[in-house]
Amino acid sequence: MKITRAKSFMLQVPIGREIADGMQATKILEFVGINVSTDDGITGTGYTITVGAGGNVIKEVLDSLFVDELAGKDPFNVKEIWYQLYYGKSHWIGRAGATTMAQSAVDIALWDIIAKSSERPLWQVLGGCRTMDIPIYNTNAGWLNRTQDELKDEMQALLAEGYTALKMKVGKPDPREDYRRVKAVRKAIGDDAILMVDANQSWDLMTASTWGRKLEEFDLTWLEEPLHPDDIKAHRLLKQATSIPIALGEHIYTTQSFRDYIDNTAVDIIQVDVCRIGGITPWMEVAAMANVHNIRVCPHAGDLMQVHQHLVKAIPNSWYLEVIPSLVKGLFERPVQLKRGICISPLEPGASTDFAEKAFRKYRVA
Image (cartoon, rainbow, N blue to C red; front, side, top):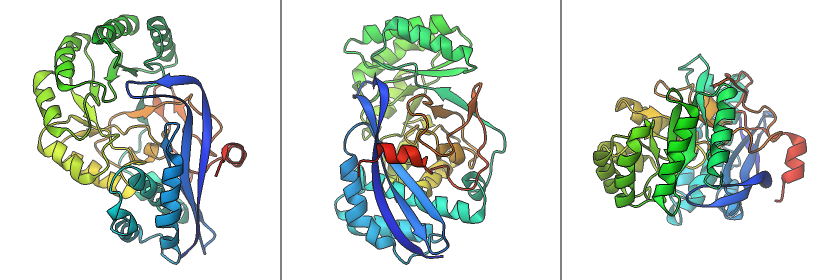
């Protein structure tokens, strides 16, 4: 099998009501990706997502650095291609951010081809470690721009739908308001529901240490991205200051950085994102490294669950799959299937990355 053509694309998809966290707010998601065609008649699709801006930069990386490098290659040599791209034209200007996100799209597309050619869902091609359905947690009721009453109402509605694990945002200008909001939500959902909080890098070490200790009384499953993602030392000190487990990974772009977090005992839950780490190839390396150190993996929903629903079934140390199901609807040909707190295993060949043709035409801007 040989690659005959690769073509990039960008979609701008409105999500309705604005969502906000401690870092930013948006009403639009950008899907930037690539369709890779082969002489066998199989086309693979890969993509990454930005929060309302920057997609044109990633598309330029695809067009100027990657597309021409793919022609004539065998997609089954996916790891060789990964290293050729990583140490090729993009290495001198990137190794993180836009270049790595663009490479994620390419790598996902190649694995999509491999799975389709094998006539198997991706999770089976990668090893099929867990045949049971995967438990999920919902992030979509906890945005920072929701009022305290809205938070309680939306969280209770999700519990009624069958969710048992929920996440909310913190990062208000006054941490005392965060405390009051977490307290109100815990009271509203009861003691049995699993609750996580996500600061989206909005705290410094003093704030995280002080308010991490104060939030311990609410039995939180983890504190997510409290600090700058490159500051490993600060996360290690924070772990010593609070009993709440520390989760992070959505803004870490290299396997080496995950290794250093693990070696420094600075993280409890790994949230590696397939759309940012460089694709499925390095994602599996990070998951294996975490497994060796007895650390659980709960991927960040930067793909809106389409690829991660496969990956969490291909490793032994996955725990929860993050879901945000109501942000976009009708976008994918085979959207992720969720039911009463679980993700139903996908059975169709491929990586579940094919876009619905009608939606693709509607939202495509480039």
